[in-house]
Image (cartoon, rainbow, N blue to C red; front, side, top):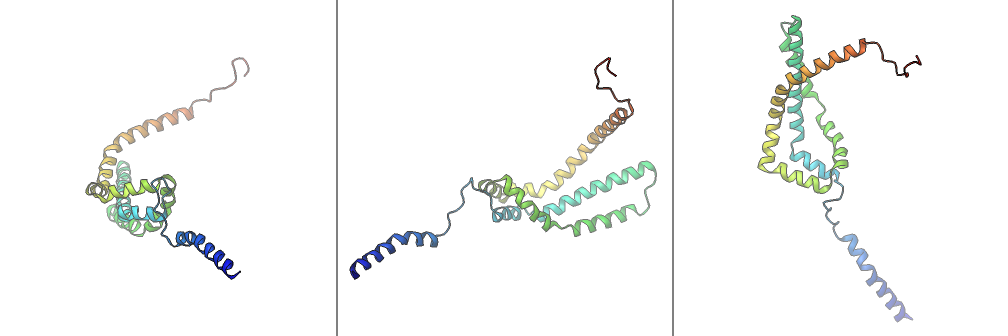
Length: 182
């Protein structure tokens, strides 16, 4: 009887070893098609220097807004003498106090939703490369120059669109009833 009990206990222990080994074994690395983890995305955003990049992009956008406001005021002939100093102070404060880390953290679920682990790894590899680092370094300037080049085109388009909207809003509504049933 003791021998049977010992044999059964030994058999149970041998059969249970793979389960214990499986728990003790390190987790398998995620596959390329697995969902991106929060850690994956955080690593990518760190590689991209997203905090610095976002601050640079905000500063560039703020400069564009400052220029647009300055141009509008100049057209009206009423640019305050201290406009540039006041705008610089205001923009510097906005960029400095921008909750960039909170914004970056809020973006992580969107990356997880749209990219796999493999996608994030590939992007991390690219942005870690010399070309990727150059893209990150030059992107703010490219964006600024591109926006400056596009602004006259967009301004012309928006002015024409605004005129069309005004005309459409001023014209009498067209009846949708069939002829003879008004």
